[in-house]
Amino acid sequence: MNTLITLLQFFAALGLIVTLHELGHFLAARAFGIKVEKFYLFFDAWGFKLFSFKKGDTEYGIGWLPLGGYVKIAGMIDESLDKNQLASEPQPWEFRSKPAWQRLIVMIGGVVVNVILGVVIISGLIFSQGESYIPNTAINSNGGIYASPNARTMGLQTGDQIVKLNGKTVENLLSEFADPAFLTNDKKEISLTRNGRDTNILLPADIENKLSLNSDLPLISPRFQFEVKQVVGGSPAAKSKIQEGDKFVSIDSQTFGSFFEFKEILQEKAGETALFMVQDSKGSTRKAYITINEDGTLGFQPKIYGFEGLEKTVSYSLGESMAMGASKSAGLISANAAGLSKMVSGKVNPKNSLAGPIGIAQMYGSTWDWINFWSLTATISLALALMNILPIPALDGGHVMFLMYEIIFRRPVNEKVLYVGQIIGMAILLSLFVFIFWVDISRVLGF
Image (cartoon, rainbow, N blue to C red):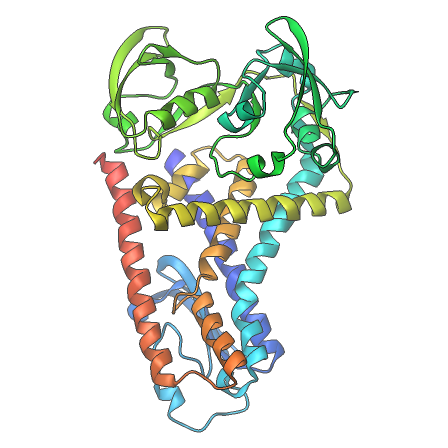
């Protein structure tokens, strides 16, 4: 039953995301009078399909291969590699007959819809659920803040209990600290209690430069506690028999007071084998020698806790929710782009960061949690938008790249170049799919 719920969530989310993506292309094409021959959720590879029907000029259906979907647009070199349609004279209803700017809109239609979907879902969650925060009084009574290495260069320390910002008593620390009204003020004074003594510190004038430094750690954070929620198959944690409910006590005799302190130590010891003291769900403690991944991870999802019942919720109007949804969506796209950049540059091992169908399905879990379902669906939709706009032939971004060339240089790319580029792009994507599936399967099998 648990597996069925996981699969239902995965296919429901994938079906929604892919269908709306292809609908973006479809509606843009029809708006410009372009004939769409096929509209498919999933691929009908080698002609096999679960079902189909025809309405007007378009065949609608569901394929058997759940790696995406497609619309077959008349007069366009696409995944079908159908060159026969290009042998005749261009017809008014074909893609190739339309101005470059119209073709460009057709090609970005899917990405635009995926971004809109992400914004709408996140905005809807904010509007319906509000936004929860941990009151500053609760942070101060539970160990104060975690201060990252960047924050420590500004004068903050882990354990500080922040009381005021520029003389104003703090209620929502994370929001008020990041408020431009505070950060852009000529004077940025923090009143805090440190080791039982009241003190004031002034943040440096170049704080903007420090805030822009790339880091997987938050600048400041409540000192969350954690335990192991789920272990990734084949990871260092799995190989060391780390299980759900386990708690880490120390690393090489070094203790820590919160999740991000633990994560910081892992990053400092990335690539090394360290001695971990691990406490299981029954309270028994054991030793475990674990080799930390090069990116400073062990391969588990944490269950964060420590402030249950202390949170407050703020409600927002529809307009405020939409603005916040757009801002959070932009942040997610930016974070995905940064992660992709790290993988390409070799700073992060793709095997530790990528997730294919199996990995994504596992993220949805075996219980139907609507908040988690919609949050994860929005995240995947935004990630798909980013991936699709990459300038790789066979992706939307590849078509956009060729169209931009045509717009700038006022001449179309040769059809042979488009055809060869499509083949190369499909080969790249196929190789990527194989690699991602290998990563998924290797995790499941534990190697």
